[in-house]
Amino acid sequence: MINLNLTRPLAFMDIETTGLNARQDRIVEICVIKIFPDGTEDILNSIINPEIPIPMESTKIHRITDADVKGKPTFDEFAQKLTDFIEGCDLGGFGTKFDLSFLEFEFKRIGKDYSKEGRQIVDVQRIYHTLEPRDLSA
Image 1 (cartoon, rainbow, N blue to C red):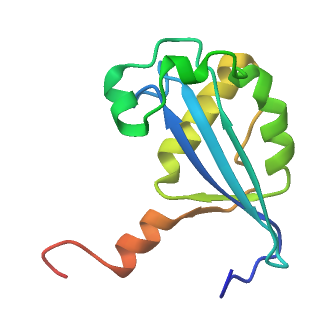
Image 2: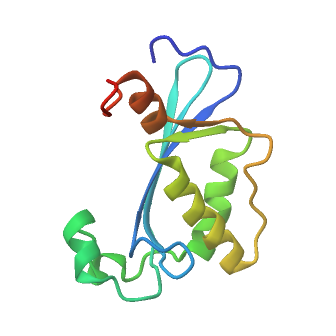
């Protein structure tokens, strides 16, 4: 990674879901790329069984079907692996508010602790819109 001055690992996250409502919908895929201060990278990626049907509208977007998630780990089964992977990391992504809200609700749903506290959040979408505004003043 060029021009990143990291003091601790930065975990860029992308999440696919059954819908847009974090209170009722579920995660169906998680991909996290962890960038270390020395520039090395590690990846964690998994299909997640949401334990609810995936609506066709969502499948059209991410192409993940009910058949794809059959036999895959539930979020409860995957949570510790994810927690261990992002331990000590700042978090990033594109539109992080969406992804992090789903993460928060999934952890609440299974009764496990998760907190963004003490982590820096890097939202590439906000950076992009700041550098490339799309409004009348631009």
